[in-house]
Amino acid sequence: MTTPLIRRRLPRLTLLVLLTTVLVGATVILRPVANQAQAAPAKFAHPGVTVSQAQLDFARTKVNAGAQPWKGAYDQMIASKYADLNRTPKPRATVECGSYSDPNYGCTDEREDAIAAYTDALAWYMTRDSRYAQKAIQIMDAWSGTITSHTNSNAPLQTGWAGSSWPKAAEIIKYTYTGAWANSGRFATMLRNVYLPVVIKGSNSNGNWELSMMEAAVGISVFLEDKTSYDTAMAKFRTRTAAYVYLDSDGSMPKTVPSQNLDTTAKIVSYWQGQSTFVTGLTQETCRDFTHTGYGISAISHVAETSRIQGQDLYGTDVGERLRQALGFQSKYQLGTAVPSWLCGGSLNLGLGPVTEVGYNALHNRLGIAMSNTQTLTQQQRPAGSNNLFVAWETLTHGDNPN
Image (cartoon, rainbow, N blue to C red; front, side, top):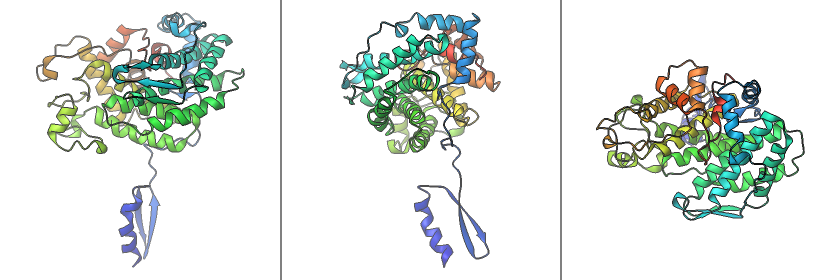
């Protein structure tokens, strides 16, 4: 009688944990199967959001030696407006962002202050000039003492963009700067109360939204050492990545996010910007434009890199394969390959942006995978700067970095 009872209850249990059953005589033993794809580390590594201390050390050594492309990348960063020690942060209690940041009440200020904090944190690490660390702290303190919410239609995406940069800055300062950061607890509270509840929900908009939001959620979870949020964000990230980049192995149609109810071919084609021919490396936004596609690709690479630093390398999984194929497909056309008539009606809106360094370094340099188009584009674009949203200085931090 015991076995049938357990069988009836299994569907409910599987919502929480995968189970296997092993018969031992007349006894049924329920044994949990570890979900290695999403498990948070037993102990978080710090600094550990997109860039590790080993990577920072490598870059610093190269900059101090005057080696290229790192010295050029550093010079570009230090000359930018984001590294200006006279910068005055412009925090708001409520940041209001409509579609395409219209209206723009604090949207640009918040994103650029977050990038500036990260830039200053990097500048501190490269130079050991404490003024940069103190400037990063000043910016983070200004916002953590002011902001309470984001509003209007672009609020989720805005929260994801800014929320991707803040923990990168905070990780470097908290774990490498020996000076005082009296309000670090308040900053953590800001991330927990203002950013995390928004981004962890995800989005059913275009895929770059949810991917950027999951990047923020994963990074914030690392800084807060929040294993539950990390697992939740990583699960949504993997589902969305599979639904964002098509592989031939997916079948005749792309994978979908269950909550979107894309249950007909017509709905899927519409969601894929009218594209009805699916080939490996195509993304859900390729036929929209390469700029938004670049946002999605960048977020995938950032989450994969953070996961690797935290002890779980996703580059050898389907995540890495989708990233590789997306980079290669978009790079080919960004470099000028003629667009066939079946692809986006024979016309592409280019402008991929500085988003290839992290994925290229992980897949080509670490794993030894040939990526000729991505390599050509990456090297042409060096030093990669900032997209002024959530990407910054990745030739410096990840260019040909073996760590």
